[in-house]
Amino acid sequence: MLKRTRTCGQLRKEHAGQSVILNGWVNRRRDLGGLIFVDLRDRYGLTQVVCDPETGDKLMTIAHKLGAEDVIAIKGTVRERPKDALNQDMPTGEIEILATEIEMLNSAVTLPFLVTDRETGLEDLRLKYRYLELRTAELQRNLEIRHRAAQSVRKYYYANQFFEIETPVLMKSTPEGARDYLVPSRIHKGSFYALPQSPQTYKQLLMIGGFDRYFQIVKCFRDEDLRADRQPEFTQIDVEMSFIDEEDIMNSTEAMLGQVFQEVLNVNLPRPFPRMDYTEAMHRYGSDKPDLRIGIEIHTLNDILTGCDFQVFQSVIKTNGAIAAICVPGGAQFSRKIIDELTEKVRSWGAKGLAFAKITETGLESGIAKFLDGFEKNLIQTFGANVGDILLFIADESKITYPVLGRLRLATAKILDLVPKNVFKPLWVTRFPLLDWDEDNKRFVAMHHPFTSALPEDRPMLASNPETVRARAYDVVINGNEIGGGSIRNHTMEMQQEMFDTLGIGREEARAKFGFLLDALTFGTPPHGGIALGFDRLVMLLVGTENIRDVIAFPKTTSAASLMDGCPSPVDEKQLDELGIQIKEK
Image (cartoon, rainbow, N blue to C red; front, side):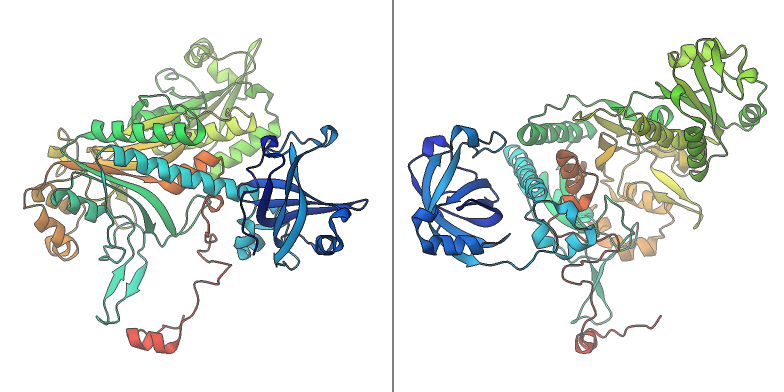
């Protein structure tokens, strides 16, 4: 085999005259009046190869037979291209290789889609032949960015005295939150391991073990319904620190993310990241992960509209609901059709309806304009509204009004193309509620996880008013994407047991599920906390895609299947017998 001496993206005009060997795939072959041009591709780039009949019949015979994606080795001499043949769109566009020898390393059958254009194949077809899609320029770039991001993350933590420590992949099942992937034990029949949804308990145990700065880039698993940004197996940057508070975790995470964006994209993230507590985020943006690139904010109007004769508004005020609105710049251009579509959207999101008022030269234009006489000036001043804008009102229960306006904010910004490209707006959202109420099971559940600590000033209310207790928790958000979340942990057995009690986890159940952790907390546990960042989501942001499958080499479908190798798949009866498992018929 002719082993390469250069790569296909490496050669420039200063290499003219050199004899080289290149290995790669045939990207394209063109037969032009006797001369044959071959674009040879590897992951480093593309180089044009010229096959001239004067070189000999043997070379031309092979060149004529070359097809797309054949794997070849070529030997030849680098030469500058003629001035009229320069290609400024290619890094190697000033040179070409005059081939003297071609070796066919392997041929390719007809492709199911074009590697030069992945959109020629539907996604399911591309996932079936994922190894071919990996040859496309887009996925090559995406996975290179993923690699460089991982390098940058490790570089930061290594430089800041963190130990990279692996935690077990086979662990105890603790059925809180999403469903576990279970692994049956052959030796201990009837018992199961779980694949980790997170290394949470292990990283806390590492703090107890004296490793005060830990991180790893780790695979995690959740058996849940999938979305465009979810996979059954995913990767997270897992971090834990001892003898710290929230500020230490947030400062360290900002520095790490700042380094990643600088080294991978040459982008400077503005630091320090803004901070906003959960309640403010919900009331201003209708989301606990607001996209700050969009300048539209929610304003609560209960005080301003007290006395308004519009029956819907009066009813909401009397029942302690929330009247709120957004002002959409340029939204007065919305047609009746668009407003009707937005109305249907807000109803599907749980609201009863949508009211609107367009700002015109003569005042407010709206079906409810007559009810807003006397309130018009105050409304316009509150929003800083201009002629050509539109006010969109939701009046409902608070738990409906703000989230619906948050989604409406995103929808209208998308319609009017108000989201700037290539801009990154980071944010910390802090002081989340410690607990959520589970209506189906009539009990409180942890908003983050049961190891999160309450704010010291709120902790006395755990027994009497648990719904008012705030957590020492924080999420890092960039452009409306939750990139990571963390918290300060319960570091005494008493604090942890109190949390279990609040969640309705009895002493016996807590001991069965978490006895090892409760015991460990009695042996001098330092104050500690951490964060987990979704590495796949971070890479999605870096490459500019909304589909997680674009940043994972071998992803699953939204039904958690691999179309390439056919998993999950049935197994032999013998394997099931060894595990003591019998498949139950539906």
